[in-house]
Amino acid sequence: MSVRVLLVDDQILMRSGLRKLLEIEDGIEIVADVGSGPDALTVVPLCRPDVALVDARMPGMDGIELITELTRSHPSVASIVLTTFDEDEYLFGALKAGARGFLLKDASPEDLVAAIHRAAGGGTVLSDQVAGRVVAQLRGKAPLQPALSSREAEVARLVGAGASNREIAAELYITEGTVKNHVSNTLRKLGLRDRTQLALHVSSSPGAF
Image (tube, rainbow, N blue to C red; front, side, top):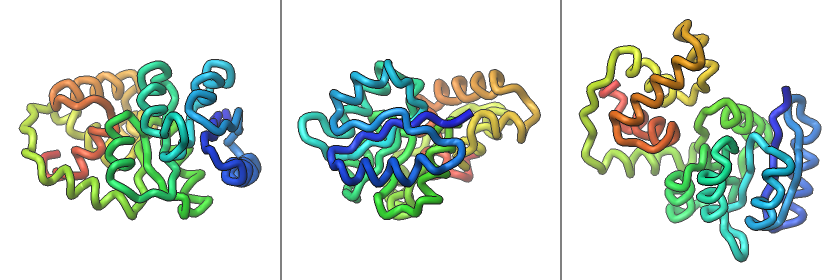
């Protein structure tokens, strides 16, 4: 089954280029492309995307505001920021808003396609250029001391490696439902909001897992 992708960028040429780039890829279907956050919120219920590629800086409603609303109203949509602006304001704002990934527009087509599939599967994606800053930011915070079971720790390590629920289930020979339960328990114990925060937490303190 193809991953259904929504493109959100106020630049017509960028949207057109992304559409032409992605629609030739097997396993990806572009279900809509729009130029603003409000337009995106209008079409999401109609086109039912799995992944939204969102520009960070747009007039009216920027990408962070859009992702915040998508996370609240359409949590099944995995948002990936695709931007030219390598700024902490957008990077950390997007992750706090619930984005599953943050890529710069100089990413290779192969990396972009891989990111879409990984986000659709529940994984997390960060450009190499920004991943180090995220880890450094988290290392500056006091580490949590969770009481995780050995299986929860295994699942957390795999989430930190960017694995989807399906990949974790196959790796550990358990069901996807069991994976979801372990992830939920781990998030609760660590006081984290979502698997993106869990992945970042694991990356910042690998020795704890």
